[in-house]
Structures are given as C-alpha cells and as structure tokens.
Length: 330
Ligand code: DAH
Image (cartoon, rainbow, N blue to C red):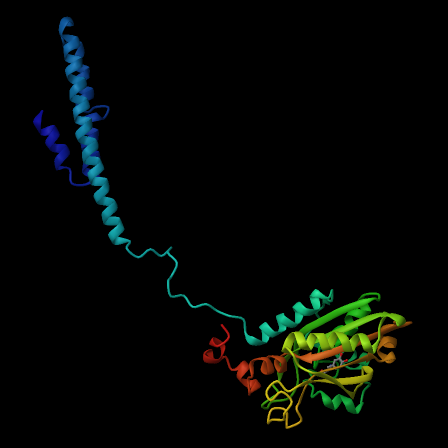
C-alpha cells in the first residue's frame, strides 16, 4: 500500500502522473478493484471496509491533486521560459510615420474648401486632347500649349498637364450650379530647382447664375484662403493670361521670407506668385454645352505651397525620399 503514495510522489512528469492516475482511479485500477472485493467481505464488516476504502481513496486523491498542481506549475514555468519572447507584445521603439509635406499641404488646402461646401472631384491622369486642351480653349497649334510641356502617348492621349480637365469632366457630368475643387497629380516635361516632371495641383471652379458669380467673389475667397495658408500676408491680383479664363489674374502674396523688403527668394520684388485664376472664358462653357451661366476658376501648385510654407529651397528634395528630410515633418 505504501508504494502507491510513493508512485504519486515519484511521478516526475504529467505524463507519468497520468499513468499513475489510471493505475489508481481507472476502471480497472486499484480503487475499483478494491471496491469489487466488497462482495467477498462478510456482511458485518462491509461497512468498516467501505469506510476504510473511501478514506484511502480520499487520501490518495489529495496526494494526487497536490502532485498534479506542482507538476502543472513546473510545466507552465518551463513553457514561460521557452516562450520568453512574446511575439504578441507591442514593440517599444517603433518609429512613428508622418504625412509627406506635399500630402499634408494638400490636406490643408482641401480642408479649407470643403469647409466652404466645395465638392472634391477627381479625373484620370491619362487624359485626351479634348479634356486637357481643346475644351479649355486651347485649340490645336495654339501657342499657349507650349506653356505646358506635355508627355504624349500618341496624338490622342497624354499625361494631364494640369487638373483643369477635371472642370470639363465635372461640368459635362452635372448641371450647374457647380462648386468644386480637384486635387490631383499632374505631369510636365520639366526638371530644375522649382520643377519636377510629376507634381500636384488643386483646381477650383464655381459656376452659377450670371448674377451670382463675380470677380469680387473670387478675390475675396482667394484672399481669405491665402491668409489661412500663409498667415498675415498681403495679397495682390495681377492681370495675366490663361486661355480658359477671361479676364485672368495671377495672385501674389507678400514675400514670407523678407516680409516684402526684397530678397533672393522673391527676386527682390517683395512678392511671391502663388496661383492663377480668372472668370471662366465663354468658350469653355460653349464646349461643355452650358448657357446663361458665369463662373470663376483657379489653379495652384501644391509643391510650391509646401516649399514656401516649410521654406524648402529645392523642390526635387521632396521626391528624393531622403529620410532625413522627411523626419523633420513628423
Ligand atoms: N491650369 C493652370 C496651370 O496649370 C492653372 C490655372 C490657372 C487654373 C488659372 C485655372 C485658372 O483654373 O483659372 O498652370
């Protein structure tokens, strides 16, 4: 009888202990066999026999449970040691990413116009001659096409040189009134300090009944927008030319580097040109079948804004992916 307790204590793994359990408490184990002997025990002694056996069983069960607890704890300990690297834990020195300054600037621009109820429209980067030029009052062989050095696939399709074609697509899809911006990627054959072959623009267009749109509206919204982007700057509108607007203007802000004193960045003029705008040319409305409406439009380069806001001297550095530049915008 003694060695039963010992068997339990000597079991050095959960597996051996399980074998001992079967030996003791299993269907054909010690306890079951002993109970089976009851029928041979003479009547008067049956009760005492049963009582003794039940005690024995309980005591064995206690020893077994204690051993099981111990072995289980040891096993958990061993597992914990073996799996000391918890791959489900979060790392502690993970690096935070950040928006690229161009995207951050784009978001800031979009936020402004969305707050004023402008819809955000998109169009394809691979455009056709009609949407990119023709419908915007740039007929074939028009000299102004040279302003936009174009990547052509063939005579019919090209990489859009501006986001203005989204104006055309939106007007052809919808009826006036229209109040939209079109942020997007554009392409031109250009590469120097201030030009990259791929860059981003935001186009804006408002079309409504003739008495509801004026140059004064355009002026006030763009002045407010530029002060939201650049802070307390002066804003001036300078007559200019774009084929899709008449009259047209280029918009300058007072130089944020020298506050209008004149410096290298503003070519000693005290002003920085930041966008183009104007009253939509009637020929543009004609090409999309609009009648009896008026509208204003504007277009800006997002990289130029980002460069000025962050004082980045070389546009190309925005696209070289140098982590040291990007880390400054975290
Ligand atoms: N599309 C012009 C460009 O790429 C920018 C522009 C100027 C857009 C004046 C306009 C506008 O809508 O009215 O240079």
